[in-house]
Structure formats: structure tokens, C-alpha cells
Length: 256
Image (cartoon, rainbow, N blue to C red; front, side, top):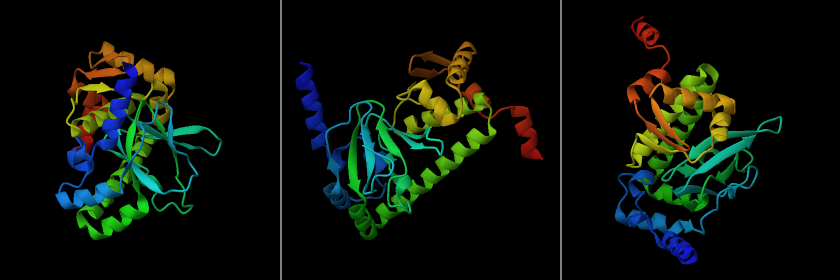
């Protein structure tokens, strides 16, 4: 029975169109018209889902497309000057992978994208997308907004890693993930983490043991309920306080 179910899933993923996709409100411009959706749908390719660990694109490959995650999750990573892997981001359904490579002077992808679980994507050839965006102002503005969000996310990670304590990094990471779940109309308090503790540690510039210890402490404080990769935010206000550090100092600074 498993094989027919798998084939049915692949067939359903291939046959889904932008107009009837559940992620339509998440990844498409809010003002786009039905006829414009069809034009966008015409340039999209939908291929067989990637298995866990499958590579969507490699760092250094010629850049030719961006990808909308339809199901599953993707992590991106790049090589440091010392040859180590640095996890640069995580992408959930409705989010676009590959935007950071637009305008790369080398003309190549600047990172490697790897499936964290069975993952389906929509491929948008960049040349065709660029041409279409020139004809559809709503799509062009949407792309600008997505690229701006990508830049802000990179800046936030740099600030997070450079200036925050380990507790603040973990709390902020969970709150950010919660906001992304809410945007997809999922529970903002019940999170499934597709990424490993090791990936989280790498992304936040922490040791694996530190991430595990902090999650356990947050659970003992009754801020979180943790069961493997399933995390429930039990006390959002306290988690926000942990993300912001010392609230009294922050309040004094805000009135200075």
C-alpha cells in the first residue's frame, strides 16, 4: 500500500497549480489577478519531491532559478574560508529559496540547499520570472519585498550571533519560527522543528550541547514543552522576556 500512496502524492504535487495551491496567500503577491496567476503558473516547473538529504542546488552551480517550497523544509549552507559548513537559513512551505544568489557577481548560487525531510518545490526559472515581473508590477514589487526580507533576516542573524546571549538566541529563534508558522495559518504555539539540534546550533553560532541544555532549562522553567522535534510554547510572555534579555534594563534604555 505504501507505493501507491507515494505515487498518488507525487501525482497530486505535479498536478497542483498556483490558483488552487493552499500556499497561494503566502508566496504570491496579494494583489495578483487570476490571469496573472496563470502567467506565473505557465513558467513554473514541478518535479519529483526531494528525499531527505537531497540537494536542490549546490554552492557554485550556475544560478538559473529560485524555488518556492511547497511541502517539507530546506536548509541552506555555505562553506567558510576554513572549509567548514555554515548553516545560513531554513525555509518552510511558502518561502522562496535562492533569492540570496540574485545578482551574485559570479553568476552562481552562493549556497547549497538541502532537503531536511521529503520536500516538494516549485522551480521558477529566473530569466522567465524577471521578464514576467517586468510586465506585472505586483509581482515585481513582491520580489523586491521578498529580497528585502531576505536581507533583513541576514542582518538579524548577524546581530543575534554577534550580540546576544545563548538564551536570547534560542528564544528569538523559536519566536521567529512561531511567527512564520502563524503566517502559514498554522498554530504559533505548536512547532515541529524540521531541522536538527545540530543545525540550530550551527546556525546560531552555538555548541550542540548548549542548545540541548537551554531547551531542557526552558522546559524546566515551564516556558516550553519539548518532545523530540515537537516544541510547544507554554509561556509566550516569558519566552519573549528571555529573547529580550533583562527587561528592566531594556525599559530604562528605552526611556533614556
